[in-house]
Length: 371
Image (cartoon, rainbow, N blue to C red):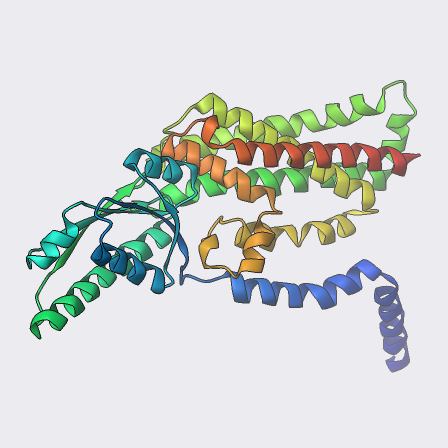
């Protein structure tokens, strides 16, 4: 009996070592996930992109802004000359924070009066918003206390008053952030899995080749098989949007038709990715191996749950290779901010490239595999 067990174990070992995809999954996937989870999963958000509207422009206000920059929580990337320009940057998602310093800031400090500054925060993601509010308040309090202590050797109770406002999600509700993310994640993962499994199953059963021998053309076959999944995907989108509005009070602030059109664009790319995976996979197990890395990448690097501002630079750049990164900006921009397509040009271009690339690649691979 012992020899039989060893023989079976030897046979299974040979089977595993001959399957290169399984070997890669066994040894590289744990290392890959350890690196991604270790560096990407972080609630300590720093380097928030910040726009400054400084009407004072004296040495005291510049010192205060330097304190914000030295904290490493705020990266002053834009100097604007009107509040309207600053808010446009906030709408586009290029900044998370706007600092506005009034013209009488330095004069109020020199007269030992309470000086006020304004902070506007993008509240679509509650975690960076809370970090900006808490850190900004601490910086102002510490700056004012140190300034007066140098002048009078006494600590005031409050020298600089930070007036903060939160845009798009004033109550910083996590549901407002999560519901759009769930829509994007469902569209990508669910459609890729369904598309891949249905075509691979046809290949395993031998029915795909039978269908190809009929008068039906290949593109007609592909489109006919994918239409039901397009309908399913849109049903899921409408269902999640409806339940989000009813159960969590997350209503669409922007154009619904624009949201559905851009969802269709993203959906076509996901279908193309699923078709490509099915064309290179021999069975459902191989298809699952190819899909597996897509889950942690989409969850961790796209901004679905964890803010991308807290990631190392290399992982932040890697996130730009994930289509869900752009689609989440579209979803949260339209649903929460109510912005139009003029603010989403770069995201639309990126999704268009993604869709054309994977649809073209899937059609080419599918035809070549069948031939």
